[in-house]
Amino acid sequence: MTHLPPMPGSPAWDGTPFAEIVAHGVNDARVLKEAGFDAVLVQNSLDRPTRPTVDALTIAFLTTVAERVRADVGLATGINIVKNDGPAAVAIAAATGARFVRVKHLTGSSYSAEGVLSGNAFETMSVRARSGARPEVLADIVEPTSRCSDPATLVELAVDALDFGMADGVIVTGHDTAETLELAQSLRGSKPSARIVIGGRIDADSVERALRLADAVIIGSALKTTPGIKGAVDLEAARRIVDNARRAQDG
Image 1 (spheres, helix red, strand yellow):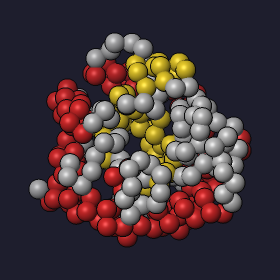
Image 2 (cartoon, rainbow, N blue to C red; image 1 turned 135 degrees about the vertical axis):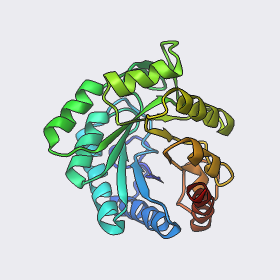
Image 3 (cartoon, rainbow, N blue to C red; image 1 turned 60 degrees about the vertical axis):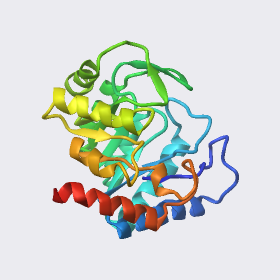
Image 4 (cartoon, rainbow, N blue to C red; image 1 turned 120 degrees about the vertical axis):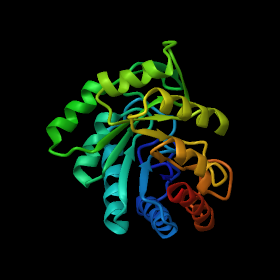
C-alpha cells in the first residue's frame, strides 16, 4: 500500500504541494509494480487527527491520487479512507475504476481515537448500488487501532460483516504477527469459503505462512526501511516480500 503524506485540508498538512503528494503515491505504486505486487491500496494514512468521515476537500484530493496511480501503473487499485468513510471510498472507487475498498467498521460499533465508531454498511452499499460500479468491499472485523464495544466471537463478527453487511470479504489484523496469523487460521477453520484478507503485521518472514491461511495480505510498514508508516516504499524490501509470497503460491 501507499501511505500518503498529510494532504491539504488536514490539520497535519505541512504545506507540501499537492503535486508532490500525488508523486509520492505514484512512485510508491511504481515500486510495488516493479517488485511484483498485484495491487496497490491508496490511503490517507497521515491525515491527523483522524476522523470518522472526511470532507469534500479530502475526497477530491484522494480521487486525484487514486486516478493518477491507477492510470500510471495499471495495477488493481484500492481505496481506504481513514478512519471509516466507506461511502466516500466507494464513490472514489466508482469514479476512478478502483477495484476494491477497505472499510474499517462496516458493521457493529467500536471505541477508537475518534470516539465511538458505528457501522455504515447500509450507506456504503447504497452508494455502491447507485454508482454503476461494483468495487469489492473488504471489511475489517478485528483490527488493532480500535476496541470492539460488543464481546462478539470472531465468527459472529464475520457473519455480521458478510451476511448482514454484504461485505465481499473480511479483514483480520492482530496486535502482532502471531496474533494475526492465529486470527486468520481460526477464521479459515470456521468460515472456509469466506474471502479472508490479512490487514497488516506481516513482513517478508511471515508472508508465506500468511498466504497459506488468507486469500490476500495487505502490506504496509514492512515495505519501508524505517519504522512506522512514513516514507517511501523500498524496492528491495518489496522484492523480498514478493519472493517469499511466491513460495506460498507455488506450494
